[in-house]
Image (cartoon, rainbow, N blue to C red; front, side):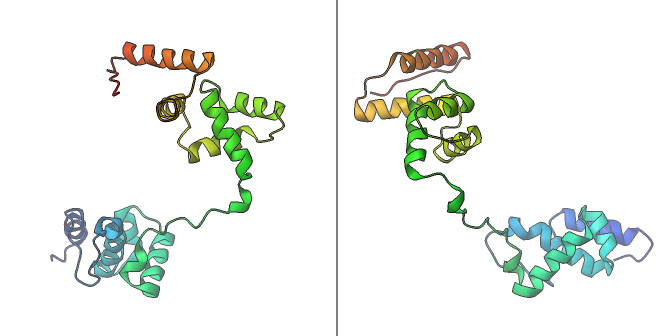
Length: 189
C-alpha cells in the first residue's frame, strides 16, 4: 500500500468495492452477501485505523458501525446476519372467526375495497377496521382485486361453486382488462 495522503484511502476503497475483504474476519457462511457490507465496514475501519473515515467512505453512520462491532464481538461473524423479525404478537390479531369472515367476504365481493368491506362487515355485526381488513387480506394473499379473483377462480374450480352476479361481473371485467393490456389468458381445464 502507498502511504501518500488519500492514495491509501483510494486503494482501500477500490479493493473494497471489488469485493476484497481482508482476512482478519473471514466469512464462513453461505450467505456471504448478507454480511459482506457489514464485515467490509469493520475491516475497512481496522485497515484505516479510523472509524470516522471508514464510515464516511462506506456511507454508514458511526452508530451503525458500533452496532456491527458489538454484534461481531458478542457472537462472531455469524451474529452479523440479518436478524429476522420476532414472532408476531398474536394478541393484536383479530379472532379466527372474524378473520375467516373477512377472507370469505373478499372472495364473495372481490371488487370491494377495504373501507367498503369493513363497513359491510360492520352491518353484519363483525367489527374490524379498514386497516384490519387490509392486514388480513395481506396475510391471505388477497390484497388486490386480481389476487381475490384468482383465489375465487381457484375455489370455484376446486369446489364447483356457483358464482354470484357480482363475482361473474368482476371476473369478466378482469378478463377484458387482461385482454386489453395484451395479456394472454389460457384456461387449463
